[in-house]
Length: 493
Image 1 (tube, one colour):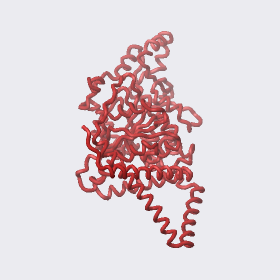
Image 2 (cartoon, one colour; image 1 turned 180 degrees about the vertical axis):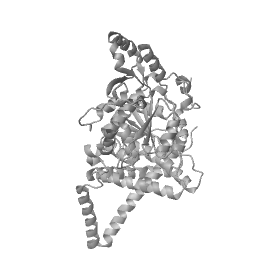
Image 3 (cartoon, one colour; image 1 turned 120 degrees about the horizontal axis):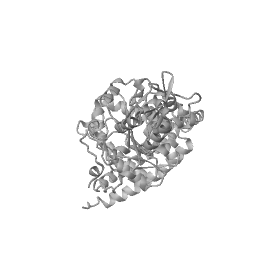
Image 4 (spheres, helix red, strand yellow; image 1 turned 90 degrees about the horizontal axis):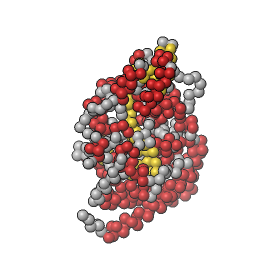
């Protein structure tokens, strides 16, 4: 029996067509049996979650209540009512309490966990938005790109520039020659790393992907999938079809579609599908910075999974990717915080630009990243298909809303906190930019983000990693030279 048969997963069934007993039906029957009101859409009936006065800068407790989705004190027309979503094993206890205190029927109503989450989040949106925008910059300003350069960094940069200018003035072309040699060594090391990566790509292409071990669905943890969307209403259908193909128990998935509150078309496209569990629509308040990492930072406290991954609207992940990532995490120590899935371009034959993009991605994700991972070096993560231990992601501060290359930022920050990153083999397919205009805009954003990330790394940390980079890069020169001298390796069947 394969995974799909074992877990009753069918990639051909759309989310709105899946036939299964819903928690809403069960809770409605429970409410009728107990003589309680059932409120499937309490916000439409005028209910509003009651908020407690005081400092709400720490959203930890309310985030835990939202993730649980068990109870919320709500107000309507000045009257308070406790909305609950009891588990099946709590029905008898609830029935006994109501039998003892019949007056509880006027003070309690039953609803769904999703409705409780909506009520609590709607009442605390400002707190969550403030946390997403200012949380990292207030707690660890040295890790946030909100301030481009600190005074100390400016002093170092200006001193370095002044030193170079002084050396050129005093030594003239000798200084220029020394700088030229250093730059040449740097670029030669990069070239040799890419040559090493090419040998890894060709070697891995001849290797059969290992079979994943059997897993007991009942023992698998909840897995959160974050789907940040912006003006992508036309891609919702294909994206959800890709999510339906993922091999993971439906009741153990937590899929959040994250949309800016003023993106009316995307919200309408999602609402029209009338999605139920495991899907949840998260509306992010429209506030600057309007960036992907801000949307992810807003949704992270709401994630219910032990593991978290991110996909873009155009992504088509391999159905076995979650299972491979979980297997790798389970086999490793807790210091393995992130796994990067390879990104493959599926429109390489569109034109020369997409073909070059596909070649670059193959070298990057099939060669360079696995090679860096074997050396325990920081990984320049891709912008999607990153799998995280949620506890580690929260410990390092989550996503920085002010850094436009949140992937590069997190890869470096995880290493600074002592965590490791590694790679897996199940790919994610996506499209490359097919025009020079879109390609240039993407590359400009990437370079800007990398410069922001570099500005956040202290000078001593930069020196340490640069020294490790040079030593390991030049050690690869010897490896590549030996491989070239021996000639191509024979293929093994």
